[in-house]
Image (cartoon, rainbow, N blue to C red; front, side, top):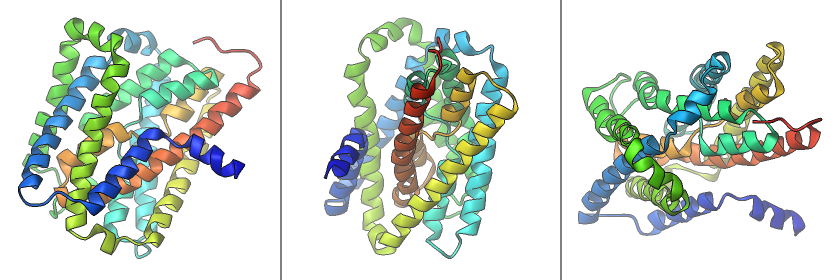
Length: 330
């Protein structure tokens, strides 16, 4: 009973809301006229979400840690070389064991940028180099806005077409992701102070935008029979593949950090920033890149991986904090 209570306390509240959103979409999916309404709201939510991402990106924090270029290149290599390679290998090796859509979802999550908030939080908790973590995580997200959709177009079938970067996909990425992000960052000198002072008030805007995208995506997926095509064994397969992916990436990052004799603070940055995948970026990106009927099953592996990475990284960060000989100043 105590174990169950601990597990419940360890759950990410946002993931609980995501799960409830999936349940609601499964029982009451948007149909008919409501589909167009929710798709329009979803497009607006994605634009708002990336506008806020750009506006909240602190240029000073990035400049404070940008000098550690070797560490940032290692984090980018882990996010956009190591992860995709392992994701492709796992997707290829698991062919025939689960559905092609789920394997595409596994490959998609491997192409995403790192998280920002949780990477920085775990780095601080473990006593790592926080300014470098801010820079690495932010650089990963900026790079991912361009690089992730390009890799998706090259490696995954989008909207039933052969792999390749279509003009429609490029237009959607530019209008829904890149332009709002750039506009938000350019306006930061005027609105950044307000956003920094009201982060807690704006957090529901971020999360409600993602929940709206998830509801719309799973509504379309339910109408197209996602739960008829997805069994319990498929969910277990996602969990198993996610565990293997996360374990290998963390092991390789730790090996590289120690092989290169990185300082302890930088080792922590590489371990956390280089092993995480962003749900906040991944869900709206999927909404902009994939057809509505595809999005639900595509983001299913991402949501499972998200909770697993939070649980594992929390344990690892706590161990670093316990074993620190002296506090590491950020």
